[in-house]
Structures are given as C-alpha cells and as structure tokens.
Length: 257
Image 1 (cartoon, rainbow, N blue to C red):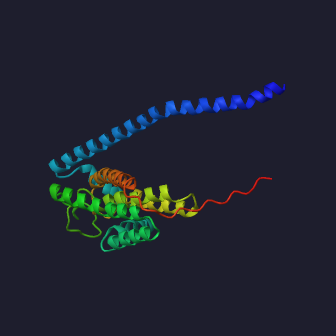
Image 2: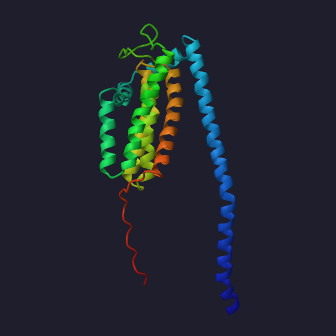
C-alpha cells in the first residue's frame, strides 16, 4: 500500500511531463492554422476592397445604396436621430484632433511611451490613406434629390473618413485597453464604449445622408487593414524600442498555515 502511495507522485510527474510534451507538439500546428486563417482572411478583405473600389469607380451609383439610406432614414425616432448625430460628432474636426491629442497625451503620461508613439501612428495613418483613395476615386456624396442630407459636405465620398478613423484609431485604442488593462469594470466599460462607436458609426454616416452604404463598407474593409498595420507596427516596435512602463505590483503572498 505504501509502495503504491510512493509511486503516485512519480506518476503525476510523468503525466505532467507527457502533457507538456503533447502541448509542445500540438501548439505549433494550432498556431500555424490560426496564422493561415488570418492570412486567408486578410487576402479576402484585400480582394473585397479591391473589387468594391473597381465597382465604385466604374459605376456612378448603386440602387441598393439609395434603398438602404431611405430605409434607415425612415426611422424617425428623436432618440435614434440624436444617437446617430452623437456617434458621428467625434469624427468631425476640430474635435477629432482634440480627442486624439488628449488620448495620446494620457497614454504617454501613464508611462506607456511606445504605446503613445503607436497611437500617433494610428492617428495619422487612416486619414492619410483615406485622402489618397478619395482623391483617386473622386466619388460624389449623396445628393438631396435622392435622400435627405442633414449637413452638406464638400469632400468626396468613397471611402468614409469617419468609419476609417473609428476603425483604425478607436480600434487600436480597443486593442490597447484589452491587452494592457486588467479585468475591471473600467476596462469593460471602455471596451463597450469603443466597440459601440465603431459598430454604429457606419449606420450613422448613412443615416445622416453623408455617405452611401458602399462608402461605409469600403471604409470598414480598408479601416480593418489599417488597424492590422497599426497593431503590426506596435508589436514590431515593442520588441525593439520598449521603454519601461508601470506595472501593477503583485499582492504579497500570505504565509500558509
């Protein structure tokens, strides 16, 4: 009986070693599969955006765009109208620059120096790419003879600058909050807030009559690509230019009795 008891720790150690060895063997294929699926998804996004851009460039307008806008604008609830206006408000100047600057300064002052650099990169990349594509495609915005236009803008329409900024910048903020903050009500609230703005900004731009649905779809696709570039840049620099940042101290272990 005593011999069987003495063998149990050895069997447990062998079992743990076998489990660790199995994990080492099975983990790389899992990682490779995830990488393959990610790359496949990335190619699908690039292909979808390229196809949509070609269609937008060669086709003056899509009937489905008008149908979607009119369907959204048929929702005449004052609450819904106010919500759509509020969702778009942070994306206009000068507030978009002020909000970005305040967030960047806050990130730096909290000691996340490389994160601040990556935040600046995430602030600049989406608008620059957006302007280049807009000037290349030169698609007119929705007109008042087709849909209701709440505020007339004089820039081009494809892709939506608001959506690209929200996905590229606020999406990167979502990533930082998720990876850097410990689980808490504040972390959850920030994730929900940022996610809500990103999810609803597309509907907001259509409802306000300032973009077609195809403009919004193109912006979500291209914005996702800029977000991937932002995260890649952050991770690339994190390994090379890491600056010491505050880390929450661990609670001292109490002595076992």
